[in-house]
Length: 52
Image (cartoon, helix red, strand yellow):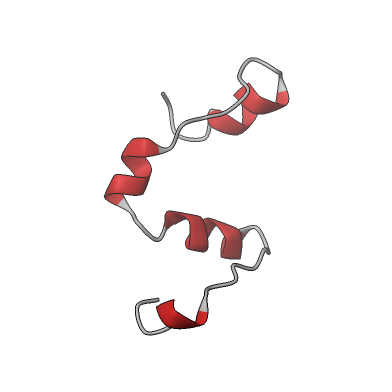
C-alpha cells in the first residue's frame, strides 16, 4: 500500500480500518508521534513516564 493512501480509503468508505501492524513494529512510538502531528494529546499512565 502506498504511503498516504490510507486516509483516502477510510474517507471514501472503501475500508473500515487500516491495519498498522508493520508500521507499529517498525516505529513503536508511531501513535504518539502521529497524535502530536495532528494536534492531539496522548495521556500516558504515570508508571510509563520513564519510558516515553
